[in-house]
Image (tube, rainbow, N blue to C red; front, side):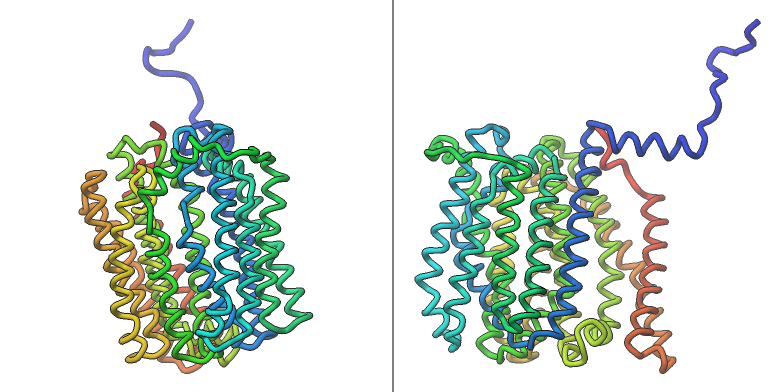
Length: 505
């Protein structure tokens, strides 16, 4: 005779393994938006992390194989290439991802013709301008370097456009294998060439080999035969997005590269090399996080673009996590910059500690700003971000020269910091009119990171009273210990106050 009472079951309570296994199975096999984002983030994160670790090891090795002049010369090459490249940027990948018909074969073919045509035009322009740029900087070696670097851009423009379709369909595993696999191939080739050549040509040829690696992998993993004739109607449709973003890449370039152009004219290549390698130390992990979030969050925001409440919830949650992770790291760099540079690159690079400290805060605000940018792109409103970038570009142009004259090398990053803070403030206010974002919970998430970062500062200040802890390795270890303490408190607060921003619809 049954003794069960209505509303009460005899099923056993879930075990600890069930509580772990069921959410894990939902992520690994589920078809929901949250599961796709988490799986995609895992693939992209693993690939990008592997790439960045190898790239970081490469930089440590190259700083001991090549003179700082090589890195300074390469910075000029990449910056000059960026000028021409961004002037011709038409936002092919973003236009294809955002377009509702982006998965159709006609639109994939249109994207290929747009990307390849832009790259071909870029090569022609740079080949023509390379002697003039070389004379401007008084270094005739730059001419041939520019032309070889242009070939790398041409190879990048010929990628299979089905690789972009894979991003749109949230098949991030394929894109991770193409993007990061090609980069790892290039890093390895750069190391080999540096051992053989011991000059800047190793860097330029390595840059081209990265593009070649991506090109080959794109057609192996995402086969695509471009149409013989450009699909004009689809190209016009994709260009509608590009017109809204017109000038955005150039304005971004002014913010990102003006410091290199000015410093290259005012300082010798050796000092420019110290500067660039120092800021790359913090820009490398920042780029890793920004690319990872951009590639996973853009298609996600695009799917929920009409749901302003959910968009805001996700934005607040992601911003809080970034601030909780980034603010302690920036404070750590403030106290440990000379030790980091001395230990990783060698004693002569510790002279660039000032630019490294400023660059860490630039990277933090850039990451926060990029999350709002992703929301604008997902809604098909890149022109709103263009106004923000215009603010940063104008601020940068006004401040860069007096800042460098007053503060030297560190002035380049100080100008960047003021510019990105101004743009971030402008864009934060702007997103309110688009999604109805409530700034109060948004600000609370940011304040959490600022609060817990004090743990890092206190730890470093206390240990500095002991002379032995001011040496590079102990200084870094105790700074990392402070970061771990800050992250433990952040995790506690985030778990208590977390919302369901990534919950399924």
